View 1 (cartoon, helix red, strand yellow):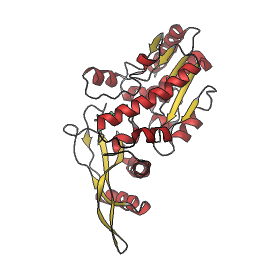
View 2: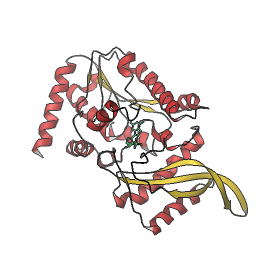
View 3: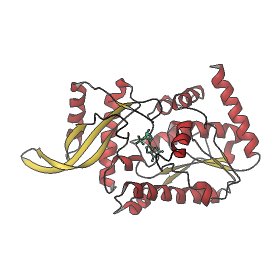
View 4: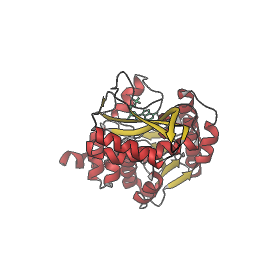
Length: 305
Ligand code: XMP
């Protein structure tokens, strides 16, 4: 692990040199990339770094609590409870790109408020190599914090993991003793559960996607997927008890991938799929149907929107 140790030392040194005596901020999502970037930067400049975690209401189950706990050693950590504001902004928005835009803007507003408050000169970002390639190729317009440099007048941006692939970031996370749950956690998109909900994003749909995703993550852990999750893709008819209901259709997706650019749908045992189905429909009476997505990327994307 000499290489990883060297990487860590160099990254800390680079951040220290760049930020100097100034203040810095980082958007901490709870994912492995921003967690590693934040830990390196905190190691470099201590409480002059303010890590900002925005709870958009579109996070995975237990994510906010997990972040609070894992990063409790950072006195400067800010947790912004913004779920109501995000759901208000998202009301009536159905176009996938518009949704991403609304979330991106909301995120920037929340982040900007803190950046101004703490007088931050530098922005630390957890951008990794595939993010840069995909943004250059314009495959998705999604980097949540991509607009930040335009609205906050930062003196500079530091991207300590910019040349790493995901598996390399995980290696660094393990070397930094970041809890296994973060180091090994599946990637989660910036717009969160919103890209796993077709149509308008509501607290109810977010709740269904969150609980169902939790079931899928638990049940499929042994398959070691790159990502496994549940999406709310529409409504359909079902029978619950003696009644016909118009309930949610939940799609289960589990893929293997190295970097998210291409992916293969995983072959899952029928009995496991049935257990997932029975847990999801059993735990939520408003879910009428569970389907499994067998599509690779390409032609499908990993997420639904
Ligand atoms: P797609 O769905 O484009 O996803 O095949 C490829 C990888 O990128 C993640 N992803 C996103 N990450 N903001 C992000 O930060 C986004 O808008 C976004 N959309 C997709 C996705 O989870 C997968 O790992």
